[in-house]
Amino acid sequence: MRSITIYDYIYGLITIQLMSITLIIIVITSLVSITTFTRPGDMEKLSFWPYQVNHRNQYYRFFTSGLVHRDFMHLFFNMLSLYFFGDYISFYFERVLGSVYYFPLLYVLGLVLPDVANYFKYKDVYGYQSIGASGAVSAVLFSCVLFDPWQKIGLYFFIPMWFILYAVLYLVYSAYMSRRGGDGIDHSAHFWGAVLGLVFPIVIKPAVFTYFLQRLLNP
Image (cartoon, rainbow, N blue to C red; front, side, top):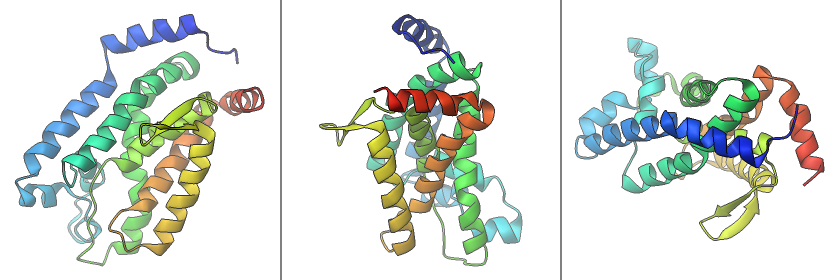
């Protein structure tokens, strides 16, 4: 698999901006989230609630829970991360995997699959609910690692860190906090979303793994 050139990147960005899936997701998620901030009942109807999924077959909650957020800060950081990395990974999916529409597929899977483990864990626990698009956003972020592991991310906006180092630390931290619990955050969704982001492109095109190794060994 050939390396991506700056000309490929510019062309890809122009094409993607004309039909920005990222922007569509951000607008829809923001509108739904903001309208539920003052309507706790609506937020509850859309949340991921394993008990209701199990006992009332409300399977739509696997998807709709990613459209609502706890507050503006929760929404802001998820959508800001998606804004920075969504078009970036759309470009690579279009040029390397062959279709920009693998991006929305990854995003939807990132909303649904990370909640599967929690469904089986909490399907008979009435009080457990979760919301947010963190699993899907994590999937997008970690797909970027495969294509450009030595690219730098501004952690907390000012601490430079390579994608690959951030990925390792993120997975370790999420796994630890998921086992520890107690902070009200669904770290398991972060963890499994990140794993999905790493595995998804390789399943679609196994040569991506070789490409990743080449980029990793030649920073």
